[in-house]
Image (cartoon, rainbow, N blue to C red; front, side):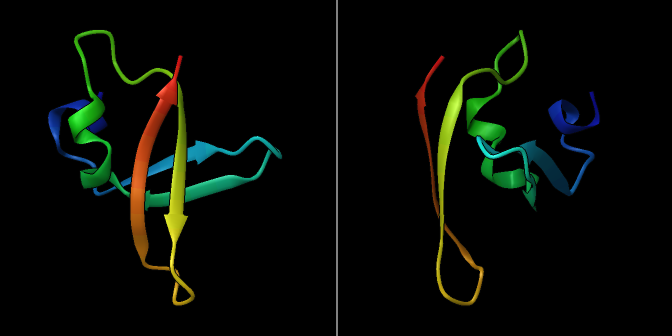
Length: 59
């Protein structure tokens, strides 16, 4: 719930390979609905690990 209220500064997600990935929560806020965040996403980083893009691929 902290993510949804904007209180958390980071999100931890699980990748397709089972790794944990942490990134700033502000990048997922546009995908939040009344039911939370659902679906598959593609995330891209640059060579310095700066998040470039997060896009929703589907459910």
